[in-house]
Length: 136
Image (cartoon, rainbow, N blue to C red; front, side, top):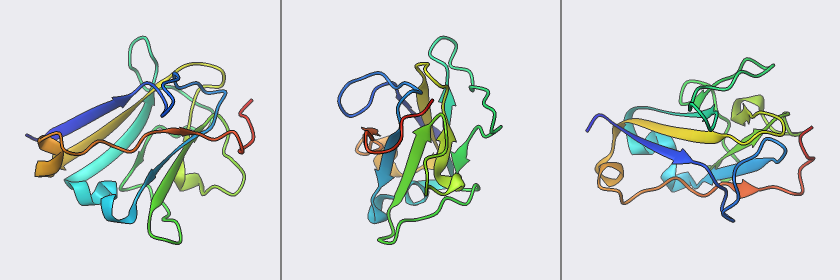
């Protein structure tokens, strides 16, 4: 198997992803995406109708192993999904989302590990972050 895709349509509470909210996903230090793939991993935001990449004013369309994602102090990695860059968040860890519109995220793993291929691994749940400023 050359690749594995996951689609996230809802957050950890079962609510549809919407650009009026900020979400995070945290990969633990021992479960980083780069350790689950031989070649590369990526995450893109896509519309809910045609699953096409969503245009955004920042012209940023992907987070992957080539975009310089910054680890947390404990070695984990937290990625942010919001229509505006949350204060204090590294731009490399942020994916712009459509303000006020529903969207999906596609997680792509190329050269996946056996664990991914066998369905023993799923990306962590997306968590709504009410403490971060709401996106406009």
